Amino acid sequence: MIVRQIISGGQSGVERAALDLAIQLGISHGGWVAPGRLVDDGPLSGQYRLREMAFPDGPSSATANLEMADGILVMTRGGLSGEAADLYDQAQAHHHPHLLIDFDRNTRFQSSLLINSWLKAKQVEILFITGARETEKPGIYRDTMDCFRTAWWALLMAEPVAPGKKDAARDDMPRTLDEAVNRLLGELPLKDRVTIANMSTDEITGLGRTLGRYVQKRFGLWEGNRDLEQSCLQAANRKHLGEEEIAALIIDRLARELQKTHTLRVL
Image (tube, rainbow, N blue to C red; front, side, top):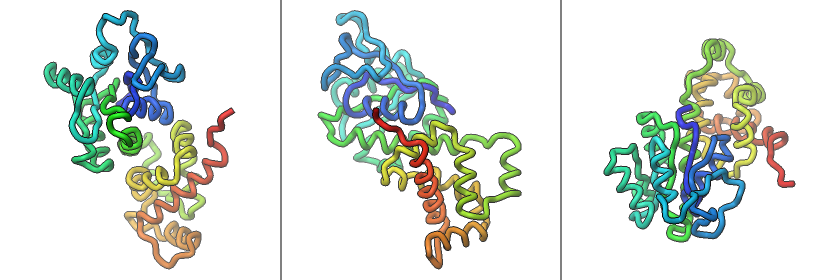
């Protein structure tokens, strides 16, 4: 995987979403935060592994994060302002790899494709995600969560299949819905199984754009896996299902199975 760490300054909105996503997806997270761990909505929770700047009059935590990162992803809705605008200008001036995502110009899915292509082209390992704050652009937290999660799944599913697995999968396609679900349960890393288990219904539906395409290709739906198609038709009590609908059914069944064993519980 290209990105090995996500960093931010912990402000509300885009930066907080970046940290929560890293935790949910099992990606290392970090970065610098202002003295006292103060952000725009109060002291930052200790669950976030950010390092506190030592001196109030020294370089800002935002500048420290920019210097630490291999690339900066700036997300907003409408025009940039304040610290996010300054960071974007700095990145441009110093030819630092940068990408601006504006949800007023592109849908979340279109934005996720732009992020996917940029990350692969720039080979970003330490990614600084920043942008609008929730107090400035209500809903930007959710936009960021949904968009980057889709981009991440696209990156994950584009990874090469381990040696020996590709041919075996083609010769031994799953023939039933249960076999398809069990195949995914065996192939997905633990962190991804936990992520899916704790997704909302809308988030699971959104996996059709990434994991769904992987299922269609991996399980021969594009090539006409009739046995699997018939099994899914029977399970759904339908006379016809398209390839995307079959993949969605498999993902839904996968999520239900994972929710039985991988749901995080607050103690």
